[in-house]
Length: 186
Image (cartoon, rainbow, N blue to C red; front, side, top):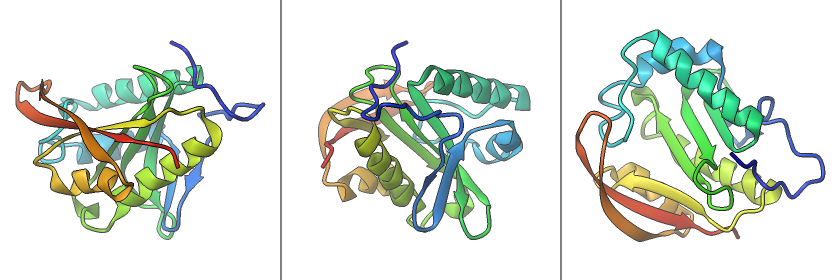
């Protein structure tokens, strides 16, 4: 897999990268978040998502290890979202260059108790801002089920419009009404 094309002469170590916003700190995913991820990434959270919840903590650890390997390779940033004020774990956010490093995919999920606070918009905005300054990007991809209205509002708040629609089947066999947003760098 090809690494991101960094705009800076010394590419950042994605395994130690920290991205901050007004209220949030995005830190590289690691084993210390395994229990939180396993507990919070449940059927309710994955309702409109491709993956299904881990059946056991070992599946969560495998996800973390795979994420860290792709971060070491330089084409993925998978982060835990933390409150700057309390250090509480809120969810995960990612910048995934696995399909095309110049058009990386953005992804996010928040635990149920963190919904409705604008954390998703803030986290995605922070990743987009960081990436625009550090990575050669044509545009970002943001896929989401159209029924997930709060998640659809995130790319729309960044000026994005739907450019593609297609049905997608989740790992659990549910058919999702997938819409794909393109977010262009500013």
